[in-house]
Image (tube, rainbow, N blue to C red):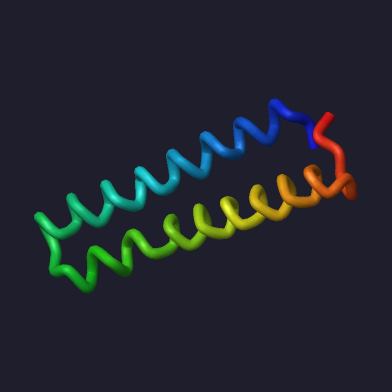
Length: 69
């Protein structure tokens, strides 16, 4: 994986987390809390998965198994 791609995925994960919190907050203004959670859950799940992938990739790069080009 290239360093630029790694950084862009990190920013993407941050943006998805921010979007999830915004969906939850604005959803609570209009809808019930449970419905707002259902709306924000998919973006939080995707961002959590992306963060885990980036964590595994960085650990593999530190161990020398994989390279960040």
